[in-house]
Every structure is written in C-alpha cells, then in structure tokens.
Length: 329
Ligand code: PBG
Image (tube, rainbow, N blue to C red; front, top):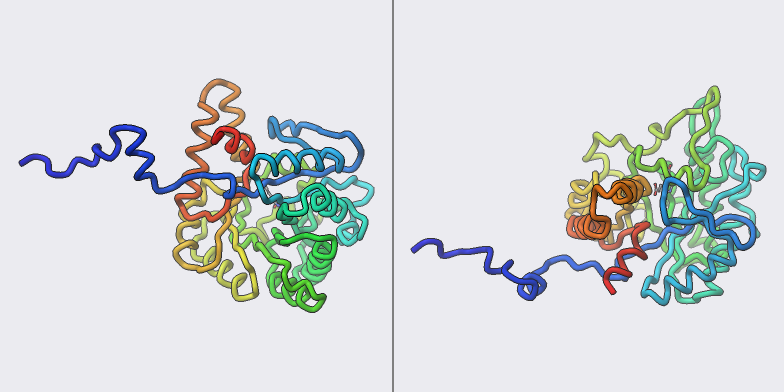
C-alpha cells in the first residue's frame, strides 16, 4: 500500500496546524529595548530605525504604561548621552542622578511591576565610543571592569531588576556579581551578553545613541578586540560557560538571525535561560524592504521571531515587540 505515512495530513487546515504547532510567540517572550534622551516632550524617530524612537523621561512614562497594557512586562534600557558629558572613563555612567538612573526610577514609578533591565557598557558615555577605557590604542580590560562594576551597583541602587553587561570584557560577570552581593543587592540579576559578536548589524543602534567608535588616531575603529569573531562557534560556548560559572542568571546570544546555529548549540549545552537579541540592523532590513514593497513586513517579522524562538531562545530582545504583540491581537 502506498503511502502509509502522509505528513500533509497534519498540515491540511489551520485547525490541525495550530494543534501540532511547536513554537508559539506570545507577549511574555519579549524584552523591549528603549532609548532614552534628556529633555522634555521629546519623541524623535531614529532615521535608520523607522517607527522606533528616542524618548525623554515624560514620554518614557507614557510608553511604559502602553507596553504594560499590551502585556509586555520587561524593558531593556539604553541612554543617549550628550557629548559634553562623555569622557574616556565613562564617568557620567556613575552619576546617581544620571539619565539611566533617572530612567530606571521613571519606569518603576510608572509601572512598579515592569521588569527593568539596564545595558552595562561604557560606549554611550565614552568620548571614544568604546565599551571600555581606551589607552595606547587598546581597550583596557581590568580597569574597564572596575567602572562597569560600579555602574552595575549604581543601576541596582536606582532600582534595576537586572543588569545586562554588553561590553565583553573578561571577568566582568564575577566582578559584578561579587559587588552586588557585597552591597546587599542579592536579588539583582545578571543577564550576560555572553556570545556577542563583532557585527555590522549594530549600525542603526549606534546611530540611535550616537555611540559609534570615533575615527581618531590611536583609537581602534572597531570592537573586534573584545566582541567575538563571527567565524567562531566553540568560543561562544566557552564564553557562555564562563559567564555561567561567574554567576550569570541569563545568557545571551547576539545578533539573532545569522547566529541561530550558536543559539541552538548553547541551548543544548547549558541549563540557564537563553536570551537572543534581534538587533537594530535586523530590524532595519525588514523595515526597508517592506517600505519598498519587496517583503511582507508582518509575515517576515513573525517568521523571524518564530525561528529565533524555535532555535532555542527563552526570550527575545526585539524592536518588533510592539508590532508583533499588536499582530497577535
Ligand atoms: C552596547 C550595545 C550595543 C548593542 C547593545 N548594547 C552596540 C555595540 O556593541 O556596539 C547593539 C544593539 C543593536 O544593534 O540593536 N555595548
């Protein structure tokens, strides 16, 4: 008898398809990245990220309430720092009344139960646009870790639930974990950007925060001496395992779509939750192609998000969070 097995039976209509579907996107999958700027009444569209905005604190309050009402429960905060507050050491990052510290408090005031995660890296505060301190054409590791550690404690003090070090310095997770414990922030979590690749997909994000490495003598023009080489796979597992051993609660792979092999590999290897960051360049590509009428925006967005989750993401940081949740209805 031909054929006994017909896989198409399980695809013949939406009812059966939805019954056997393995991966479902829901609002609780998302971390929503938010860009905060100084000032009042500001809502500026980022040119290379259509329909994504920089918000002043008053508008951050409104945005966070809207997210909450849509069922989104976690935000990942980034700040755009004015040039006059930038220096090599990222001193402004430690200001108790700095923009990040105020943003954390603003979100908690607006929505006390919203989970607040904060980016920990010096680049938005660095006059050179690097994630650590620059000296003699290098990014100093241990000196940078000291600042990043103080920065993390400062975020915890302001009320952050999780700090998210995205700097890729060695040993920073242990240093941050120990400092948080010492200062009594036992419940402040760490989401480590563990396998973060030196990627050209971060371009629009650096436009959003004006945080790209500057082009001056003796300052590296790229982040390849600390972010990972995209040709490497074993190294991603090693980096991730190290962060877990040092006390990371959640580990992250970044960017998303080009790195789903890494996501699955790490998912199979470790027993902590895995986050994936679908980054600014991934967002920009879909928006641009959709604007030209070359791709179906919503269909491509859902296909990509589902693929990221299917690959092993327990949560996705995505600029599409609101678009996707609206579509889910
Ligand atoms: C800062 C940071 C970057 C991103 C998240 N945190 C940029 C970079 O490392 O240059 C990228 C996010 C995105 O592109 O959406 N260290």
